[in-house]
Amino acid sequence: MTEKLEIFTYPDAILHQAADPVENIDGELQKLVDNMAETMYAAPGIGLAANQVGIAKKLLVYDVPARDGDRNLSVLINPEIILAEGEIIHDEACLSVLDFSAPIKRNARIKVRGVDRHGTPVDIEAEGLLAVCLQHEIDHLNGKLILDHVSGLKRSLYRKKLKKIIENR
View 1 (cartoon, rainbow, N blue to C red):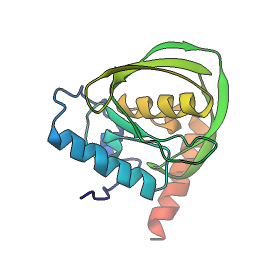
View 2: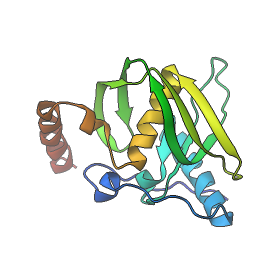
View 3: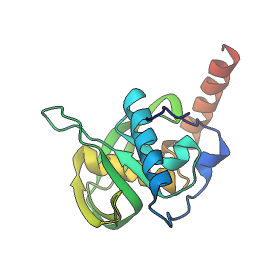
View 4: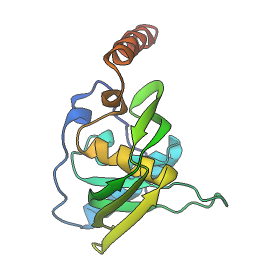
């Protein structure tokens, strides 16, 4: 049975921590994958990194919907970008950065290497929204948020806005 996990939000320290490689693909990791998927779909989001749910391991789940809208959960363990080219600017939001979105500059095309949930090596060539999603989630695994891609002024304005949001709760 799966459970929805807590999504940690900025400025929690876990979000700024680089994740450690996954050493063992075992039943515990499979349960974490299933719980992360449940959490991502419920949020709703198209990607979720393990440190967003408080676990500093190099694991992410994603599901960038195809045109037919069918779900297709994908899992990447120990992902790394091995090739990147071109440039795209995409308006991004984040489940860990409440009430914020901004145009973020990313590589237009990437190749990511990692392993799937069964330990099978995979290479993923991505462009468009999938490339943006993978770069966003891999940033999380490296302790980087979309706020790190915006100007100091935008970060400062967001901190003020977040303070008001928290005060009004």
